[in-house]
Length: 239
Image (cartoon, rainbow, N blue to C red):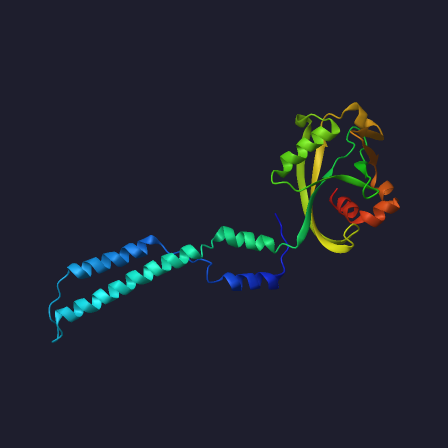
C-alpha cells in the first residue's frame, strides 16, 4: 500500500515521539540491579589503603539501591508511556493525505475476435460513464471478485483478477468542490465465460446499465472528458 505524507508533518511527528521510539525497559535490568544489591549486602570487604571495608560496602550498597531505584522508575515510566511500533505506524497513517482509495477494474470484450472495447456503466450520481470500480477493502482482490460475480452474474471460477498498477494523483472533486488526493489501483479482470447478456453492446443487471465502449468513443464523450479523463488516460497508458 502506498501513502502520501508531507515531510514536514512527518518530521514533526518523529520529533514529538523520539523520546518514546525504541524505548523499552527490560525486566532483566531490575533483576540485575537487585542481584547486585543482594550480593553487596552479603559480601564482606577488607580494609584497603587505610579505607575501612565498611566504607566500601556502604558505597556499593548505595550504588545498588540507586541502580535498583532507577530500574524501577524506568519500568513505571515505560508502562505509563507505552508507545510502541504499532502506535507509531498508526500515527504515520493518520498523516496520509490520500483521502480516497479506489480500485478500477478493467474488463475487455474478449468474446470478440478483435477485442477493443471496455466495460463501463452509467453512474447516475455523476451522470458519467465509469469503469467498474470499488472502494479499497482489506481483503481487496477477493472482495472485487465476489462483487463482479454478484453484479455481472458470472461464476467466481470464471474470473481471473490481475493487479496492474497504482496511481496517486490530485484532482478536483465535483461533489466536494475542492482538490483531493486519490489513490487508484488498476486491475484487469479476465472473464473466461461471459453470460449471454454481457455479449450485447448494452445490457442491464439489477437496475444498472452497462455498455461496451472503445477508448475513442469514451474520449468523445464530454462528461467523460470533464469528470473522468484522468482515469481514461491511465487506462490508455496501462492497457
